[in-house]
Length: 336
Image (spheres, one colour):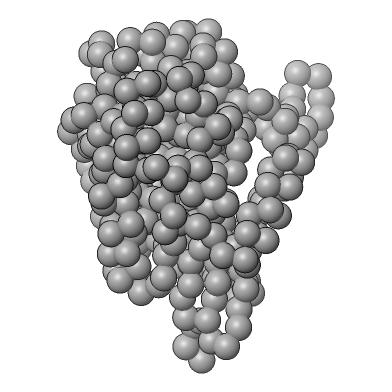
C-alpha cells in the first residue's frame, strides 16, 4: 500500500480571484439564491458532512494557527480555484491529485511545513462530493486567517499565540471553547507524531507509536495546558483508556446523537471550582486502517502487530462516522 500523500495545503497563500461562495442576496428572484435558501442548501449538502468527518481531523478551522496539523480547507480552495475554473475542472483536479499524490504539487510548500500524511483510499464519489461542496459554498475560516491573508501568506504572526479561549456569552460557552482548545492542541501534537510514524514505517509504525508514545504525549500536553487530558473509550485498545461510569454515560449519549444525525455539542459540567469537558472522537477512513474490520480495512501485517502489542484490544470493528471514544478533560474554572 502506498504510504504517503502530500497534504493539499500550503503555508503560502496566493490569492487568485477565488470563488468563495454562492451568490446571495436578501431576496429570492429567478436565478438568485436568498440567504435562507443558501444556508439550507449548505447544511443539506452531503459534501459538508463528508468534509468535516474526513478532513477536519487535520484541517479543523477551529484550531489556532499554532495548533493546526494542516491549514484550513479554505486554503486548498484558493490554490485550486481561480476566476475561470469550472466546477468540473475543480473536481477533476482534486480527484486527479488524490489518485496520484506523488505527482508535482500545485502547493509545493505543503510538505516543507506540514510534512506528509498516509495515502488514504477515498472512493472517488466521496472526493467529488467534497469538491462540489467546496466549490459552491463559503468555507469556514479561523479568526487568524484574515491576518494571514493580508500578509499574502508570508507567515503572519497569530496574535493569539494559541487557541482563543475568550468568547462573549456565558461561562458554559467559554468553558466549552477552552475544553475544545485543549482537545485540538493535544490532537495536533498526537497527529503530527502519528503522521511521522506512518511515513517512516507505515501503518504498523503508527501502532507502535501509539503503544509507546500516545499516553506519555497526552500527559505532557496536560502539563503544558494546565489540565487533565484523557482520551477514553468503552472499547479501549489500551486498558488504561477505559472509560469510567460517568464517561460511559456520556459515550452512550454521544452515540445516540450521532446515530440520529443530530448536531453534537460538547458537554460541560462545572462543580466546586472545576470543569469537566467531554467531546466525541469519531472515525473516518484513515482511522479504519487500525480500527476497522480485521483482514478487511486492517491489513494482516498490521493486525499481527496489534495482537502482539494489545492482547486485550477491543478497538476494532468500527465503520465510518462511529464513536470511537471521547475527550475527557478537567480544568479549573476562571478566577473570580
